[in-house]
Length: 102
Image 1 (cartoon, rainbow, N blue to C red):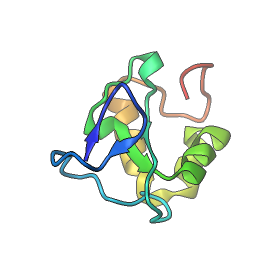
Image 2 (image 1 turned 60 degrees about the vertical axis):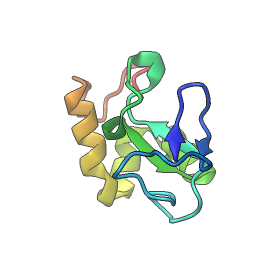
Image 3 (image 1 turned 45 degrees about the horizontal axis):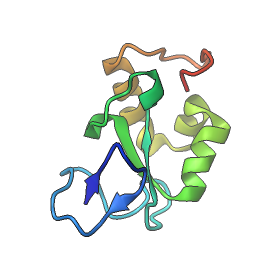
């Protein structure tokens, strides 16, 4: 599966893919639809494995509705990856988030 910057869809017809990515949503196990950038591309976040979570539409929407801090608290299995990606990119590691930094 290949993640492309041209589309937010997973392209299963390709054979190459990130080694640590699963074929299901990282939260609920449903078939993923969207790769979520922990640090958004608009704010300079890269299209690299460490900055991407595979999420189904429902969980992706939840990430955006809750914000990264609350989402990480509610999904402790993913909080390490979220915090690690934010630290690697020099982003805030507290609940106070500036507009456009979520």
